[in-house]
Length: 215
Length: 70
Image (cartoon, rainbow over all chains, first blue to last red; front, side, top):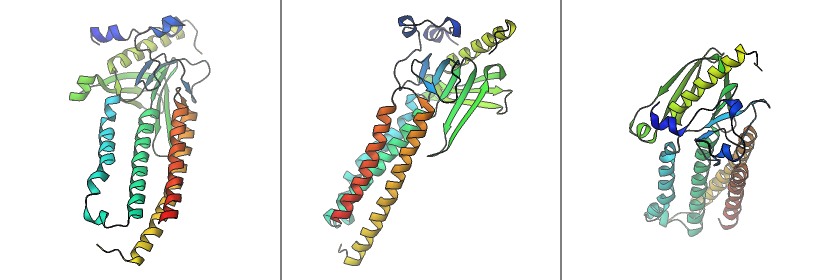
């Protein structure tokens, strides 16, 4: 981790997290529900987390990864203005032209909604006890993978490519001793900071074990 | 290009069927959004649910308009 990132996100032990205004001044803390990197987020409720579990980190894919579908959607929005000059379309009765246009924009809207939902809800969560990988594979299938912090064996940061290096995002691959041997946080912002937070949480968990404070 | 009556009638039936299937899809999106917001709450759920309902209403609206004007 370089000096700049250390300045950006200071790892704070879970029992020393400030409350009130001081909490809101922490680096990496965000109030935006759209944040791709939220350190100790305020209002997050997650179905698989226990009541006592504190959510340390909420991660999504870096916003720049949305660029591809946003450009596709822009082309889809503009497409009818090009197609409408073509003769087969113009030769259709006007009521058919109107319904075709409405149908097309419905499909565009559905595409935008699906892509947004895919980005917004496919998250990775780190609590003081576990890590979670939440995947909505298709319209109605959900997969939540989790592993205890003390089951983490190895954390690898993968960064590369022009966009990844420029915008500081990459993959964090976590090898675990749990039933699922590997959990991957894909294209998350500040992967070095994520790895360091995981390292600190493991140390903290070890300390809790030694002190007999394990939940 | 001259579109004959039988072709336009076929297109009308096909279009209405397609839009009916689309309404079902829009309903599935509503279920999907409900499941997603049940899984994770971050504070943007109302807007997302509104967006899904708007999409559903537009699907029904398009079907009704198509049924009336085609």
